Image 1 (cartoon, helix red, strand yellow):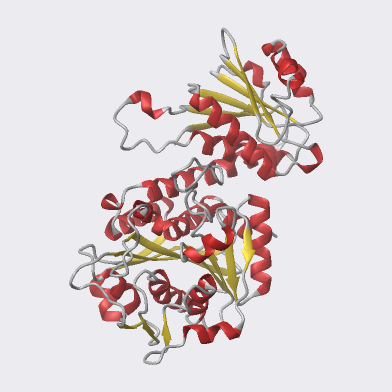
Image 2 (spheres, rainbow, N blue to C red):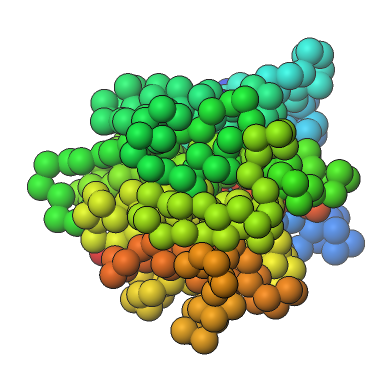
Length: 489
């Protein structure tokens, strides 16, 4: 993780390789200051329409001395600027500077915006732009790592510093989540994931319980066990809890943690199967939410439940036509072994209800149908409580982790009826797949207010940079979203 620091000073006094200022389409005072260091570069770029202050545009001037690079990042129309737009602009500037070799960068928090929100957003965007998963890189030249980031403001008061502190916590947490997501499946099997969760719990002084295969068998967690029984890596159910004194509500966050998904006997196509190392993204984000809640000292009890298994193929793997008996006692006919996420979550969601939360939010890379419907711009949200869904959607607009609601009408329940079991794990062929998956999950939450977030299209940046994340990497989608929801009044 890059070193993050805060300073109350003029950005031009920073002893860094690069500095970053922000502007708008209708210009700002920062442009005159930029010109003092960059000469006529800005005026020429504006005349040629190469830089117009539009959203996420970046102009970099190279000069002798310190700083070597002076960058101007566009925010677009002044009246449209939001904290998330600040976040993406800081990400764009930092990504550009990282690529051209800056090792230390100072970014100025714009004076025109709310101090706390802007400071947090700039911190998060800059840290995301500097993020590098270089564990497997052997060449120093290939790493392109940023050593330090300074967030700079000449404003007084606590708000700007508090925003920075919150930004650091969110940034450190999302980096941890992304490291887990980006790790190859061979190095992150269910036992490994459970050990990471235990380390987080120890570092943050949180309670944690891990049920291994023997304990899962004894207590009847058939959903997790059956999905994981084809692998020699035994499944785990991990529960981690942050319980501050005086908490007035309890929120359970449930995450799908399939550390690798072959699809089982219903084998996935080979061309992008490597991406199935990301199928544990919901569990990783769940771990991140609990960590961030603890670090931010939120006045909410937060319980993270992570169902962790590997969906592999062997003589002992579960098969189409099998019937799984879940922890709740309800049974699921397996129509397709590649619809395994809802099977492990059946146990995790039921487990969460036994902890008596006020509400449940689950995060899961659940369905390809969600990707077909929404692409990589938003996650789907479904549930049994409209107030919760509306609050999550509002948090999504604030954080840029946007949600779009799908219906969960009772008519869809017929699509998951089974002739030989209570339910089957697939709906009708090529019809409402994301809804069918959520409808099965709904059977295991009882009367607890619940929202399901299908992050299949947004958990990693597949085709392009998305969610302040570079192409090919995990996004940690869900951490900022749920933390913002928990922090909201």
